[in-house]
Length: 391
Image (cartoon, rainbow, N blue to C red; front, side, top):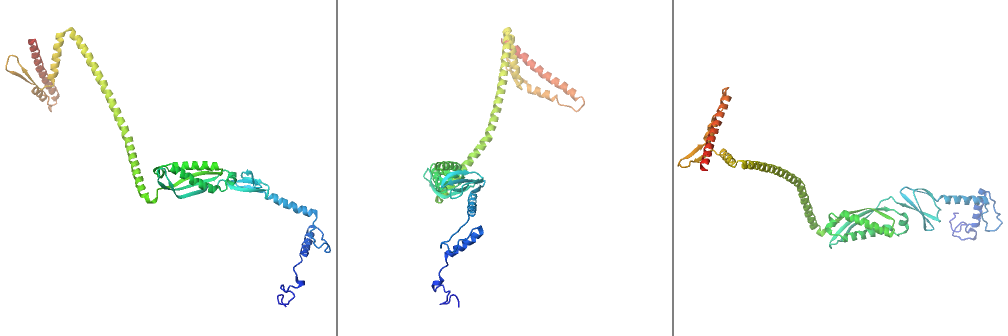
């Protein structure tokens, strides 16, 4: 008959008195017998107390306790990696910080080890945050920061959630900086300055709270007006860029023309200095000549006066090609054709093809010059005699 057939002696649902649960005392006795044989102990008699139990020798118990203690103490050995710092707490209270390398601490539950990665760069971003500027405009800001842990103790115990605190501090700081600047400055040339000031404000606030965090970089990724007015701001930015381009072109032209103008001015100054030197020298020469003439005039006034008159007349006649003389007491005017005399003198200087043309031309030139000189001398003598008669 199967054990599970109704009425069977081994039916678990039959609830007969001779089919009860196993005797726990018997189970413990069997386990005690096996362990006693393993560690050299003796069995307790089965007719003893009904509870029974283990009866190990002192050596076996000490050996087991020693192994447990050694394993427990060995669990306190740990190694801190180069990028990590270790923080030890004893019964929940901060005890010490450890540097990279092998260390040991009292195992749990007395002390606990916290590992903190201080070289890992973490990032946090705020996207499309609408903020109010100083000139009451709205600008949408995208900002990202990178940070790491500089003080593991503060990071673990001073603030409950340092990362969430950092996010709140970052949003508060950027709103404060944006609220102190105009929109034109924010969306154009002021991004780097705003990022720098925001980083300084965030770090100061984190240090004040004792979060143990260090902000390494703040990047203002985007600063744009709202989409509804973005076209108008784009036109304004383009006009500002054109203005800057014109300014740059003007500065380039000024840098090109100013050195040239300075060179020309220097050249004019040098020419003026040279002209001044020439005029001064000429004036000094004229003054010296006048003083010499004055001394001669004081010695012979009449002769000097006549000489000056003749020299002046000679200077005038040299530059004149025709001379008319009004003879006193007559109706006839004497005409002296100096231009014809000069023309005849030039015609006599025409070169010939013969070998002796040079000598003949020299003689003709000397004859023409002598005739012209004679004419001038005769005219001068007549003027001189006329001057005497007049006096």
